Length: 136
Image 1: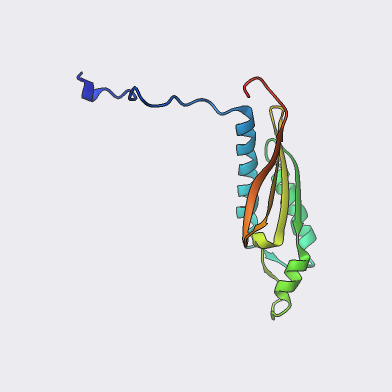
Image 2: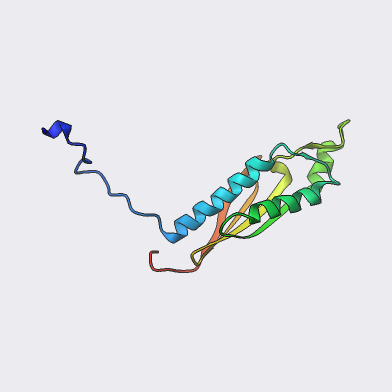
């Protein structure tokens, strides 16, 4: 075998390390948000059905591993404004109608995340990470 056939990594490459517990907890929170948003985006929603839809979203995501708490607020004021000039009495659920907080606890690390509109786009962000362990 000559040097060009060697499949080992070049000497100057960096060595990958396992993610920390905090990083894994943040990843878990991201999975929950992706599921929540993409599972429910496009769902027909009206001001009258918004509270039951919010509870269904919470219950669905709380079933996932490491999920401690989910709070979903479907902003009925924004829904009503959207529907004011429309012949329809419902619209499709999008991020602009949602305020969401998800709390994940992974191996002693608690991650609080939120979603809110920013510059017309639903952004999900880590609000806080708390707890300590040996690998952080």
